[in-house]
Image 1 (cartoon, rainbow, N blue to C red):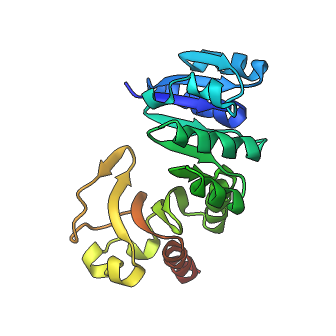
Image 2 (cartoon, rainbow, N blue to C red):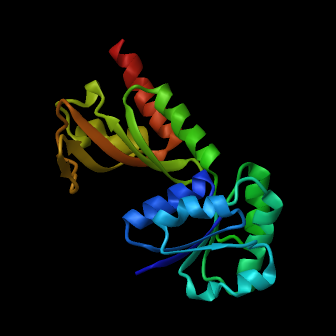
Amino acid sequence: MKSILLIGVGRFGRRIAHRLSEMNVEVMAVDKKEERVEMAAPFADRVLVGDASNADFLKGLGVRNFDTCIVAIGDDFLSSLEVTSLLKELGAKRVISRAARDTQEKFLLRNGADEVVYPEKQMANWLSLHVSSDNLFDYLELADGYGIYEFLVPEKWIGHTIRDLDIRNRYQLNILAVRSGSNMVIAVGTEFRFEHNQSVIALGSQQDIRNCLGKNSSERR
């Protein structure tokens, strides 16, 4: 079983703890505010009240023993930066820290974070993509500007195969799977023929998906 040290259990941190508990991941939750720790207690295996920016306190947690340390502090960037740096100094295997803006992301990466999550930016990206097309159902960001997208099969694709449409060259998208109701087709070859009421799961850039859905939206009008 994987073990996670979760530092900061405000609303964002509690959501992480809740989700991890559903996945049977061992969680130790830490926050300097007792009321937050009490609210996170139902979702954590262990909870502790304390200031993780204090080096002695953090050292006592045995950070080397955790598979991942998550710094989910959202209301005090200086503390987040200090905790991130201390975790790495103490030998943490993997540190994931939360950022609230681009400059914070850069500082966290420079000061020990192995990864940075930026919930507001990621939600803004998803929401802008979602409202820009009625056909886009879901989105998972993989790297800056690239992700996995699920969208309703465009009308112009229906009745045609992947080879006919030349999707990779025309749209720069890689088809990973096609969903038909509760059925998922994973091995999607070039002779796969699209039908009504299917959704496509594809890998590509945000610009490519905009071009694909935008072109098809204009073609239907």
